[in-house]
Length: 355
Image (cartoon, rainbow, N blue to C red; front, top):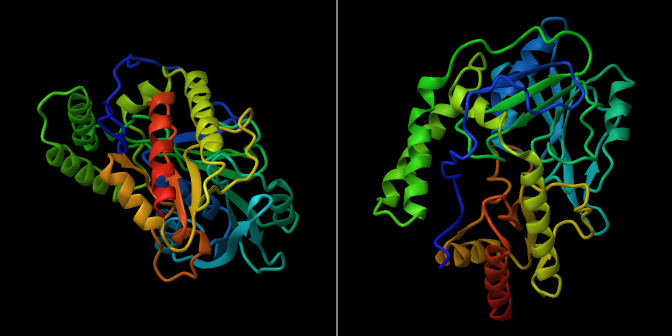
């Protein structure tokens, strides 16, 4: 019996031990572990501001509020370029290459993106414009642009059962701004919630609403922590002991199964028509739902204990991408086997048939 698929990660104590090793190497010598993805962006901004003024950032309208807020909090004007759907590559960018800006912000989507961003990034760098790329979704793929952008930022806790975690990398020069404050006391509630969820999944009599409230409260603490806080010790140790090759392999296998399982559905399709799942590692497997029925499908899945997020909740006061209203992110992470993928596919087929 499948109890629940998706939502917050439960606790995993199988790889936790003390470690001083560094697990993520992408070719940058200058990097720092941060408390969150948002604080990683803020560290990059503060580092740039030491030597340069930033008046304006040019960023995609397909993003989340936490990517925008660090610029706003530093009194930086934000302008957006459009990200839309493309039948061949999945998505396309509508960029004004003559835009007057100080920072160009790029995002790699879902770890499955087929659009080559390297030329886009270099075109702005050629004009002496700093490029920050959010590589959260493509962090574990082998075809990412990690060595191209001036700064790369990522949220690590989207991938793994950790309580906090982000990273910032700098391509050239010393990273002068780094988080220095300990954060262990701010993650105890999150770790407690993760342990409660594990016990719940294992069949113990645990009040689900109780640990969900703990997750919500702990996420608020993540949101408002200053950029000077670093990753907590628990999460750092997990990162440096987890088998990332196993994580990559399971995610690829699960995504392949979902991709082929939904191929013949009439009202649901993969956002990316030809994902290269031998090189790419998906954070989620994104689908597009026809005729404004995305929320209806999401509710149906929740009623059957499958919890799929959307990317993203609409940010405030920006021209939204058309993608946000029709995209649903299917779960394909390392917690689950082919059995769970088959269950998700069976639900999608049932809903599609009754559409």
